Amino acid sequence: MNQLYRNTEHRIHGLATPYGPQAAARVRAFHESIPGYAMSPLLSLEKLAHRLGLGAFLLKDESPRFGLNSFKSLGGSYCLASVMRDRFGLPEEFTFADILGTDAQARAKMVFVTATDGNHGRGVAWSARMLGAGARVYMPSGSREERVENIRKEGAEVTVTACDYDDTVRMATKAAQEKGWILTQDTAWSGYTDYPARIMQGYQTIGEEILSQTECVPTHIFLQAGVGSMAASLCAYFRKAYGEEVCICVVEATAADCLYQTARAGDGKMHATKGNMQTMMAGLCCGEPCTLAAEILLKQADFFVTVTDDVAATGMRTLARNGDTPVISGESGAATTGLVVRLMEDPQMQEMREAIRLGPDARVLCLSTEGATDRENYAAIVG
Image (cartoon, rainbow, N blue to C red):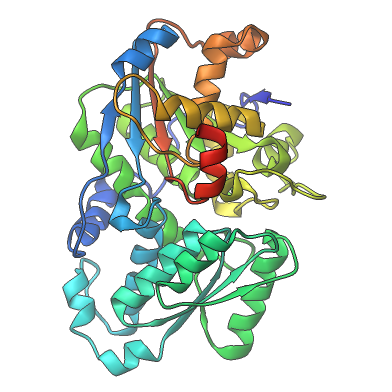
């Protein structure tokens, strides 16, 4: 079922974090120096907004990002490059060319390892190849072959495990310790926070671009969360950019609702989702929250919402045929749009809509975080 938690107990106003427009400018400058960089489009879907009875509907489409079909390359590239920056003694402000100007043989000996449901691993593999390093990627049981092959095409060695995502993270961590590889994981835990923080910093480029692409200030922002790294990074960024009045909703898969459970518990502890997490939203199928992300979201997000697969399917079909600009959005990418559509059109979600205060004056911002990363499933849902 779809559930909502109003985050009044943990919410702190005016919180200072390292994620905001001033810090993000340096990150965006690095991304702009990478060959093939282009801002992903920010679409104003006016016909969809009119249909839903909203003041505006903005969609940031991350599928064209570096030709990798998702936003994840932003975090991976900045993290890997900043590790090399430190290794070779480059200044804090650096470019892609600065990295390539370092010792190529030394870079080739560096091996980055990560666990992934697909998009993050592809971003790390691509980043490693672009920077002249090696990559090893671990994927959970049941990973779609298309996602596996997309990572292998970037030159990474891929291992599909016999366990779920969270145990796969532990396998990648153990491999890094045993083999001297560099663990580049987009989730944090006690004793492992530096590299996840760098990945989160990389995602701020999305916020930087949005601010430069429109003068429309959203009243409502919906952010997908698996472990929560992207959601936390942009939540903190938009709090600095737009202030405390904007309503920020964190959206998870009902089958993997670790942030929702952590917020609802209210005991200051991280709460994992247990059992067999069955959802087609592979990018959101994470049972254990990123500690760094959870700490930010608990203090800065207004609502935590869980959605079922049928909501994501609604979003996929809606974006494909929105009446303005057709958008190919995958299962995780369309989850937030699907939620907004259902909130505005499903009578059974009226109470939730009223709690979030969506109406004719609302200016909504959603992210389509991925394209069709599973084309077979996309075709079955959208046609």
